[in-house]
Length: 480
Figure 1 (cartoon, helix red, strand yellow):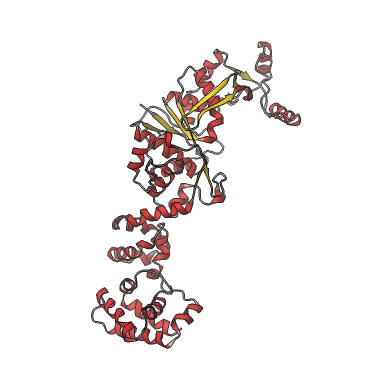
Figure 2: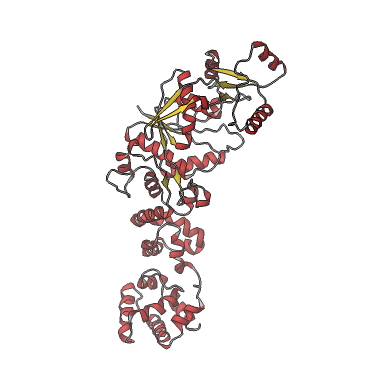
């Protein structure tokens, strides 16, 4: 059975690049009926926080990327590296490499290593470990111990050519002569990143490592560790980088990058999943909008491109709009209500569900993201519309506009039944009555009632605002 993993570090909020990695692992596991494992790599104690971990877990759940194994699941295996360190999971693997002479103790102090680095730079050489402790005699080791030096453990890199067989990129060759002996256990006893990753992947029986291309340089080190630990290699697939519109690596300067920001802006998880699936992968028939099950059914790692994928927020907005406008009435109301309550408070909470539903449906076609509901429905919730002097002059000061507004005030005040049908028949008759075009009637009336040139269907607007509010606003417009 295929087993894949998503292994974020809780040093920041869940961001778009990480979500794409999680998604591709999840899609592959779903397609082949494999297992999707979530592992928290929290060994960076200074930067890792519980808040960031909670953000990652909540973001994955919001997107529907539920894991088969990981935090919160019933299992004896620990899925946080700090917990695994506490259980001494990594120690036997370090000891095995030391016994095989594939690793050795390094007593170099941070100051000595910095000095070596500066010397290499001064000589125009690439910075790296010189191998000072590679072949220490027992006497030298004892002397360092007597001095009270803490020791790290380094992997002994052997000269060879390592070929990474990558599903996406083909064979990628590395020369280990360009790789220094690297630390596998820090002086404080904690495992280094590359070592912990390999041990965890072995222990969790990971068969496919699907991750960003920024991890490709780590792969030869990890392959050396797999081989030294006599473990089968997983298959590797390194995903293309996500780029901003300027083709540089996606970053905060390109706009929102964290999932929570997109959630707060009113993007739907289904739209985000659909769009992110297309960053590097494509449907065999070139489809763009599709349900997640269709994405799963057609997802093949071999169809992932090597080239960087451009994150276009405008295309994401376009796709999100398609999903928003397709939401069933009940789901749309539920989705936008938090944004309306946040913006208008009691003005929303005092209204009936039936009225709110009608208001929301009246502006459905104007929504791209859920937060658009705030501006799209403002006319219904603000106590007094904001009028611009230029538009007051344009729409409300000529005699025809004043006559029409006065007519509407008098008619609406005297109506025995205030219904959509009655309003529609009356408004449609006004252009004939005043021998003018429809725009000469609707534009001044709309502006007088809403302070806007455009908005919901006008008859629906008049009906939902209610007779009292409409008449009150029209009277105030006459006095401007």
